[in-house]
Length: 500
Image (tube, rainbow, N blue to C red; front, side, top):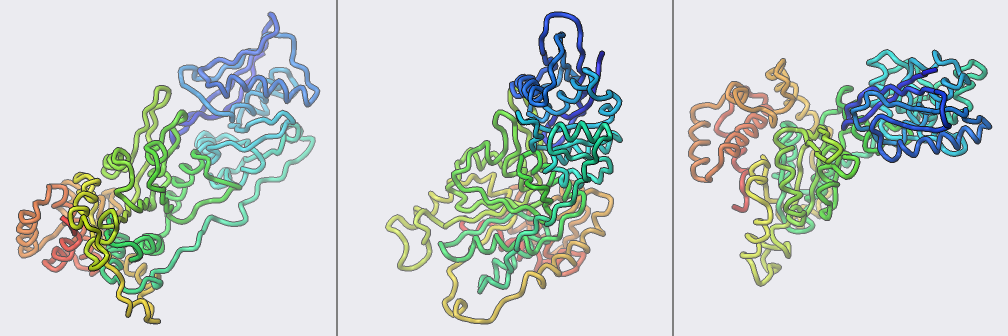
């Protein structure tokens, strides 16, 4: 007798349908799981054995073989417990085999028979929909599975209730949508006093998706400015929401079915390791740059990060993906994030502030900035100084433009550029490259001459030269102008190399 059901194996946010086969044969009593599973899967037989004992179901005195197909794919996780137990019960004729053949199942079993939450529910539910299969998951994660727009979802609290539901003896209630979405409070730009140049840079960054570096003494509002960028960005599309939530689901960050609806804002501490930032570990989990996908990665105190950690950002900034390679895993995660960074001008923080500089100024500033490599700086489009705030600005009760007002201009600029990029796959000016940049960067003759002279004087690399054009393109879009004029180029150049 062979019975079967289905579950999934994870490769980043991509999943592969796995068939669970159970066969009972004559021979000495044994329980063997084959199919290249990890230690958690090998231990699954003991949890299944204990759960059946709790339900007063004795294993048959036969040879039990569980096969995870395809057998040449490495599999890991505790979510195999439930499908293995259900396929075994079907092989034992406790439940008709046809009742479980058309489901993808996930769940870790407790020794009392409870079905515990596992990671990756959303991508697994999406895979079930692609294959026209039903989906069975823990009760607490039914609301997460609903976001896959799947009709046949069973969310069970324990094994006995699931068995009775499938037999038609009881009816489990359908999963309910989470009461609240993940919509955190977004600070408003009107809270920032002064700093007009920095506010303008934020607007340009939001309209074009540009990376940004802010340099200034402590207490000038660099972190406050960065925290207000999400309030200027357009909302996530439905497809982007699914991407973001699949990554967080695989990382185990989704709780109680909460669905993320706003762009992620990740701000790791400068003590973050390589693995925590780019991903990896024994199970090749996504790191901060993938958790910031479609959102913002904010690195405060940039030079204090480990040099090798910062250098690891260079490739994903260009490609929008990160590949984590391990002995038993080779996983690619999306990492299309907007990098926003902040730093002091020197170690003491007060270079250029009269009366507060340390004895090693200005040499300390050059040493501090040298902790950041030229190639990384070359990938940051907007670089600006954030000076100390004038006390008269601090004392005023007049507020600046609100996030709502600036976000409206950003929206208009994005709609203006969207018509230009229709059918190209490009979403923002920061992504324009190659022939598309030549096609859509309509520089006037005066603007082109000015840019070439500045590039020679500032010794811009080819990448730096093109990034200035991208920023100028965004500035022109904010002005709703198709041609890039000399004023647009000059403003773009003002955000390049502030301390070099």
